Amino acid sequence: MPAPQEFIKYIDDKADAFIQRLSDAVAIPSVSSDASRRQDVIKMANWLSEQLQAVGVTTQLTDLGKQQIEGQELPLPPVILGKIGNDKNKKTILVYGHFDVQPAFKSDGWDTDPFTLVNDKATGRLIGRGASDDKGPVLGWVNVLQWHHENKKELPVNLRCCFEGMEESGSEGLDDLVARESKPGGWFDGVDAVCISDNYWLNTRTPALTYGLRGLSYYRVTVSGPARDLHSGVFGRTVYEPMTDLIYIMSKLVDNRGHILIPGVEDQVGIADEEEKKIYQALDYSIQDVEESAGAPIALSSDKVEVLMGRMRNPSLSLHGIEGAFSGVGAKTVIPAKVSGKFSIRLVPPQTPESVDPFVISYIEELFKGLNSKSKLEVESLHGGKPWVADHNHWNYEAAKRATWSTYNRLPDLTREGGSIPVTLTFADCLGVNVVLLPMGRGDDGAHSTNEKIDRFNFIEGTKLLGSYLYEVAV
Ligand SMILES: C[C@H](N)C(=O)N[C@@H](Cc1c[nH]cn1)C(=O)O
Ligand SMILES: [Zn+2]
Ligand SMILES: [Zn+2]
Image (cartoon, rainbow, N blue to C red; front, side):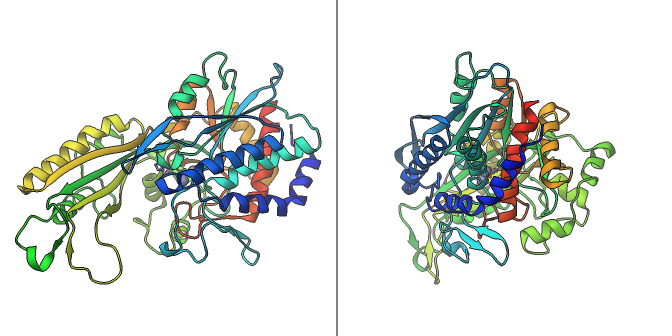
């Protein structure tokens, strides 16, 4: 059943107010990985819970306990559970999103303050951290509910919400909560299907439905030696330097074509046959798309199928940074005493963090042993999440397809996402129901990057899409 025309018109009429609400959300720097921002993540939870209550959602802030981070004990941000309706004759749909964001500093290369939403009328872009990932989509649900609440219109489905504040940091504590609330009498009892809007179209033109996510295994490798940072003029060529050992190890993890060098990891994944390659060939995607969204002509291959498989169905290993290394301006001549290299592996079925960890840890330990260094090594797995693939021949996907058609007059690309949303598989497993990913933003939104944006068009049409989905899935 299509969404009512009055709903569609209302979303257009209220566009400026919705953008103001997005601006208010972006202004709360809810960075989950930064201990000094934890109170802002909690503030964001309270703010969002109030927004949901104002549009008729019964909410509950669920405490997840504490977390050890950077040597401190910190409260985990609460999860917002929400509920509207309990009609036995309606389907029950659970929507999930997250209100935490990745770190952002103007000095990273942002053109404007990351936590002040810029409404650039010339380009139609709404620029700010979290605009696309994931505050825009989460507020899309609030926008949908606002019309129903203001106009006293019943939703076509029973709605359950789960909004978390730790997605960008491993969703700590959430799996246990989902398992608990999926039991009879729990908040998610009776859920028929799940919808998540927290990823992106493949390109800038074609809406997408996403039926797969890669998993993630995040590592920290620490090499330490001297009791304190040293003067390289006094100690250079005199002592074992931690950074030298760490760089050696980091350089042996992946080659510059993206091949993972850790024996055993790539072997876990089957090779695509010609049938599977046709799926990627059929997608609306070009090398130009990847190069435009990366901002430079740097694709690993000129073959679109190779590039798409690299993102969607093959594992990848990325080096992220080195904590403790000199990175400031100027030419400090220091020998850092302790350095930690960070890298992660994006996983695909049948890989899991548990199945790759032993390969990674023993490989790094062997590499280090071969160095005969007097420094010390520590390898830690920081957080992980399993990959997920769903059946896209399901009524949940059919409903999302119809909603896409009625919103954009186009059929969506069926994609697998290179990123990770760890709780997706938990919902699928604990509830035994289908999950659809219904992205709002475009492939060039720059999630996790500088100048993250969502186009005004995508925010407003995406709101209509989420509303239309609830009507289409109801029948
Ligand atoms: C796809 C989703 N919007 C997202 O960005 N997920 C993150 C999850 C994560 C896990 N550790 C840190 N972040 C991602 O894919 O990086
Ligand atoms: Zn993210
Ligand atoms: Zn996200």
